[in-house]
Length: 508
Image 1 (cartoon, rainbow, N blue to C red):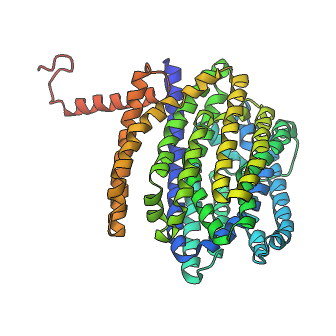
Image 2: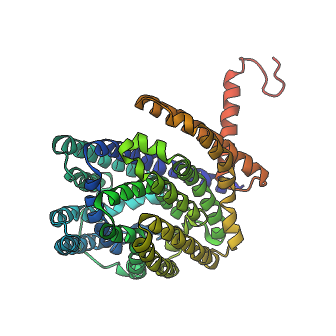
Image 3: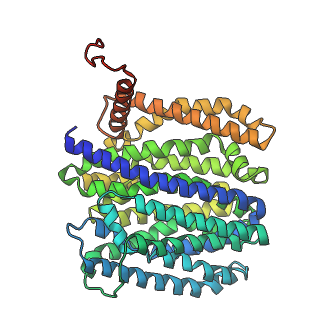
């Protein structure tokens, strides 16, 4: 590995540590809030908000503009580009807000739930605020400095936690969930203009820079939104609201590792891919393996330990959701070989093949979800999602082969190291599960889960290093971690060496 490659690996690893660390802290705040809300509110309250949020997510994703992806890859960033990005974000926010307000009453009638009208109108503020973050924040991304974004995200989550907790404790109302959804992005948007000052000015002079991503991005986001939220649209009409609440919370827990680990790594990976040049294929494989290594143990923990996780996070009244959590998490493991296909397509300005991939997955998902939901309820929906997920991964492998010139077998091999490391670590979790579930008190349960989960991660880390060495020590995050550990051990030995002793001979 050359000095330039080592330097890039260190910068990507450092950026990934900041983004993942920030998102982990943010998700810990979210989980802490969920811990309290699950005790103040009922499953029906979560089901009501999840019904509203399904439409919000679809509309927001439908009009999502990957503005930062366009800005991060340009050689020279100009003021006109930033002002055009702000204008597009403002227009997008207005469209999303107006459309959600227009859909609020029809969705209330369709679901026979009058409370949805006001709820959806209030929730419309969240996506509008997310689109108004200062475009100048991308300057930090371009130099692999994700610390300001981490501070902003934590600040938003902290304020949202305080507001939601107070409302839930005082009123025991679903509006506490809505308040957290809106407060977080509002705080982040306001603070972004302090971290990256920009005096907004309306202009579309640099529209050609964004036109390709916006055009095909619309198709990408439409298919992605429907793929993501189709089950949440159908199940409220086919299941009791309390059962849907259990399903939606289980799915929220399932999506936590993706949102806390995989999603924040997309941005530093895009920056690394943008500088790859002719070596984009090799770099993609290394980065995808790194993301899989980080992502896999969190999902495996939910697969093996659904009951302990639910007992700690939600309480015993939510235990019927454990099977949903387990099987939905298992389907997430299918995505390991194609974790970065979206980042690759956006970095290479190839939104069209990503749109085709998402459309193909949607063609598989729609009939499968409909059949599964109508005939088998929640289990049928989970099975349908697994089928559609496998189809999406297959299409992703083909897209990456075309764009990065990497074989399908090489892409599949990126999952071998994390999967091999999971086998002994998951066996350990399975052995100690009866002891954890047998805890007679809640503090004892939390203590047991924490200790054994840390031992699981330690065993997994050793497994990753062992599998990496057995596979010939290929370049990647493992080599960077191994070199950092070796340097740390060497420094420790030097610090412990008595003064006056030679490093070479060990004699005075």
